[in-house]
Length: 275
Image (cartoon, rainbow, N blue to C red; front, side, top):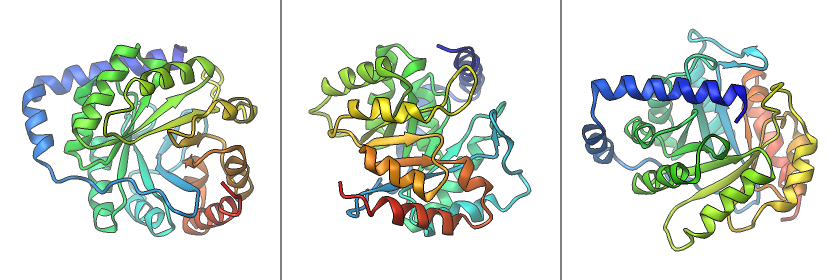
């Protein structure tokens, strides 16, 4: 792992330990499974989709919003602009996120039938249950951070909670581990997307060439997601041309005064590419 992911994993584990002092795993599991199912992830028949992101701060770019902003209005604008799902950062120390953001966003999105996805540095099934209890319809799992056994545990918990999973890879090794696990689970009823993140974990800079080099390794069995560095309609169109089925877009949408226009323009451009 990188120094950044090491630090995030340690912080995440500390948050789990603190949360378990207030509510046991068993109690949280009961509460989570009593919640109504979140809207299911529905991919468009038009061939390309976007997971739009609520992210108040980025370690690479600094503040992208604040607690005083109408960030719930932005979440709703993402849905109305055509997003298939909305990713919500819940990591507090580097991204200014919280579970309250996830809870409120999920409640705002539910009537629109769009799922919220918990984006965090998950290290424990307890955190998957937290996502379900907050109304989320999906979670991010970072393959680089976890041994295969823990990845399987998180996938199992997500499947039991009826949550989709975005399984994130950074390189060839991550993809090999991810696909090896998923191929062993073909008979399971679950929704898994496989993401390629082109951000360099040492410098936190975007390396666009990673998309070109890794896209040929994507499997059609699990929709591929381009993560980081997709900022324009032309970028989205290029990702579709490389074979990605979705893009996760955060900083560009958070920085735009008219995210509906940017989002709809990205979708329109990408959907001109024949699958």
